[in-house]
Amino acid sequence: MSAVLFYAIAGAILGLAGAFYLVTGQIKKSNEIGNSKGDRLTYLHSFTVLKAKDNVKSSLDIDKM
Amino acid sequence: MITKCKYCGGALKFDADIQVMVCEHCTSMFPVEETEEEKKLAEDADSPSPGEKDYLPDLMDFNLYECKSCGAKLVLNDVETATYCAYCGQPTIVFDRIAKRRRPKSIIPFSITKDYAIANIREKFMQGEFVPDEIKYFKPDLLRGIYVPYLLYDIRYKDKQLIKGRYTSKEENESYTRYYYREAAGSFVNIPVDASDRLSNESSERLEPFYDRDMVDFKVEYLSGYYADLMDSDPEHLKTIALSRAREMFNEQVQKSTPATDCKILDNRPHFAFENEQYVLLPVWFMIFHKDDQAYTILVNGQTGKVVGGLPANQDKVIRRSLLFGIILAVLGFLILPAMWAMGEDMREWANYILMFGIPTLTLGGYRNVKSLKKSLDLTKEKTIRDFVSERQDS
Image (cartoon, rainbow over all chains, first blue to last red; front, side, top):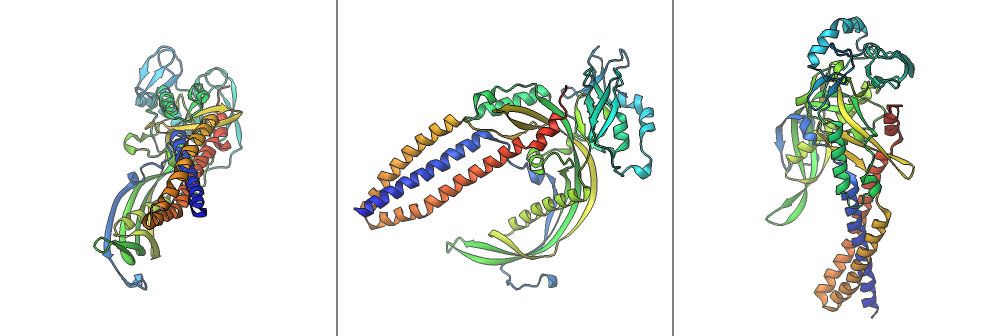
């Protein structure tokens, strides 16, 4: 019986946490306007990977590469 | 000196809609180049000598100017370069100010008109379910078009990096810690950093992007009818901001080139060079409204129309919605979790997982939402932005 009561109370707390998340998300969507920091890649003119090695050792000396 | 109509002598104002100078009295229109041509001689006389071009002299906070249209004496903020005359309402341009300070190289003229900016703000406000009605129907007269000073930087960046990341094998469906080596080079063009101390970098970054396709050589005529600020930030400090933005974008690209997630740079050798620096004026609409004696400032990108700001929520609606969702979900949790426990060992395990991860994840997510909202609201309520605009109110 005590286990059932524990799950019931924990379930109610979970529900309250869910309500907190949902309501704050709705307010954020409604009242926060244009919070993204623009399309930053607009300023990236060129990008080239000159050398790539996967699965190297953690002790790799990058000055010797 | 004021930009005047050559037919009737009335003040000319730059019209963002049709991108020409318009006489407010006789409605004659002139291309910007034409009016610039006529004032070239006078402008040359005001230009600084080559030696003092990049020198920013220490000026007093306030200076006295004369309105060339009505003769009134005006006190202007020491970073202001264009304003309406507080007495006759003419869009007066004070050339002495530009001559004394570093002249902007380029400008993106306003292409979003005042009406369009208001319509954009109103549309965003109307979409907000929790926006109080008194804010939705704001007074549109508290709107100022201000050219904000920016420095645009071109940066070349190169780096060697040793990266630690989590690699997930699709075959084995397991993840491992792996190390990656990357050497990459990139170039950035026109990274904007706002050069006005009054506008926070957080706010100005949210206004981005500004597109350089509409950028033209600076001509004082574009300031006519708007307000403008000149640079008052330390250029060395602005360089560090531009560099940190370039580094962030570069690292993001490098990490995208690895098959890993949760990447962390363990060791690196960055090299960078500033290729070019350009002083420009970019267009921003500032709208102030009050609610419960608190001022809020909403920004609109004068080129793209992007609206930026945080609004207070309708408290009654928040309480009602919280009670509704809280009661429904708490009752559901109260009933479902014990039922899962009663359904046997497997379901009991699932119930434990849901509780163990669900409660902290949802609480943390809600906390993040509140934090993000508070940050937006704080920026909108920021006193420095409000002062920035208030000093440009017509009296």
